[in-house]
Length: 179
Image 1 (tube, one colour):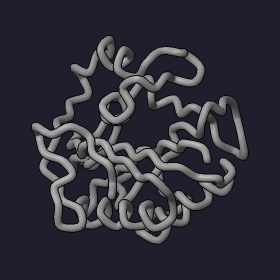
Image 2: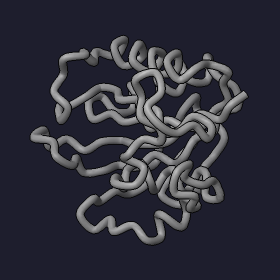
Image 3: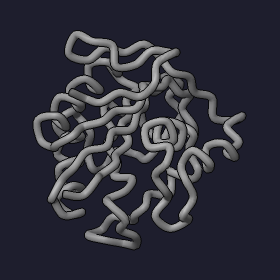
Image 4: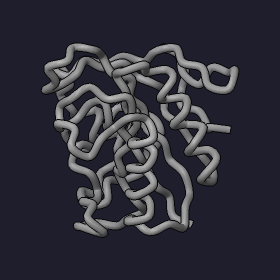
């Protein structure tokens, strides 16, 4: 089994689509763990609706290509189209961040994903969920990368969020397991 880490985002019917994504992840993969849910201001988007973002980690034996295809199928099931502009509003965005310690361009996917080092909405939840884990190419702990990150122009804050009838996120809770 390999630990896989994905980022999840939505700025259209956020609660609905994030919950359905979590249901799908939990049904398909083992040992689902979740960060808190963060609300973030869209960066580079003309649509001004804020996003909900979180990071999920789980175990899988799937290849990078199979994982990427699974993520894309889930996005498409939630209305995302392959020809959607990069900075357009979205019901669901699921991106592979890391697949074990793999690095490079694998099955059409660049690993680790660049946004880990450039986007607060990825790095902060990742640092909270896996503080001692290390970036596959930099070798630095996510918590250390977050401590040095300048997030002044990328505001985000933890929000209250429930899934399957229980709180998985609030402004003052730590990350939780998915089950």
